Length: 257
Image (cartoon, one colour):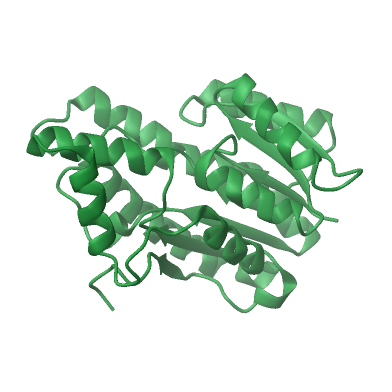
């Protein structure tokens, strides 16, 4: 049994990934900002299998003191992280002109500085044990920048490059580091972005939803379970030869090769 730390695990893609890892019998450490949502997610997962160990740690990854407290909890409970699913909610949407310096600063804490801290938290143990899996949940905006998602576009691209560098450094220790770019999934985050788009264009959300589905080659939104299944594979022994990859899971929507 391995121990997996999953960020943003109370809902959406994070919860789906947690459920997928639980189905493989892994011990889970679930993190999210809202304790009630976190406990609800944990209760759902515990019903999957008798004896399944699920630890919840309320944590805002954008706050350094929260991550320090998480690290102390892991040490006190003797939880050695073998799998990290680095996932957080999206930063403030907006264009380069609209966004404030404070919003950019929060984006740096949420996306980039949190990743640096999480890697430093889990990598030493993975190196010592000679095995580890890190999955970064990014966005197609990392490769194809979106004007209304300026912070996400810039910082997720930086994260993809950072992960690539780390993958090269730690591969000899049996650790893989991969980044996924999910797009076209039906989640609360997707709903939020569609409402923002509808507001900007002064049209109904239904119109935006239909246009979104029409733009996906498979002509439908993806189910979070489809991402979870791939994450479960990448964190397995069978995927030990896949590292440093930046992979789209978007129904064929990305234009780049």
